[in-house]
Image (tube, rainbow, N blue to C red; front, side, top):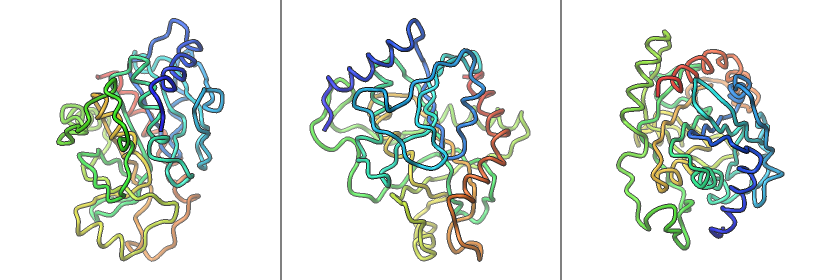
Length: 273
């Protein structure tokens, strides 16, 4: 369990590194999508390993650092890599950076991921705006004593992902000529990919894409009262959809291929909010 003092010590360290720069937006970049951080103006780099109480990211394709700077005219704090439960982190550890960002004054979150397509109408390389999620794992980052400084004991979860932002993202995507779907993200802990039987069950339950991240951060951000946009890059079709094995290398390659499109669209969206 983390204490409020630990969150504050992490936030104070980061703010000291940022100086007079005060971020207004947190962006969490998913697997293979870290290239967006290279578009930042006047970047400031803060490795997670240097921040008090932070855990290091070990996932492939994740640099494990904050990058602060200007993007689309906004003051942005990016996570170039995130923490996953499958790395051995708890839900609280995976969501820890979100609460630290809240103490830095951040009120907005864009959370992205690479995901497997479950809905047969999706295709590899397509972007999906997350309208809701399904999580059947028993734990979550709010278990344990509630820290009232962040939010209420029993937060409402009816609208985790902001409808206005979802609509705006769709409009910006249309202007960019980028086809975007909207769907439900199904959270699984990993690190193994799902079995074909699990994918059939996820589809029957209403999941459109499946992945191993995003939900811990979204729960914590919603608890903190942040405005949230979630976007999945469907890098591959999930198990059993195609007659082919899945691999982490495939996911990163697909994300890299879509990287330039993702970066242009995200920059345009940030400029529009």
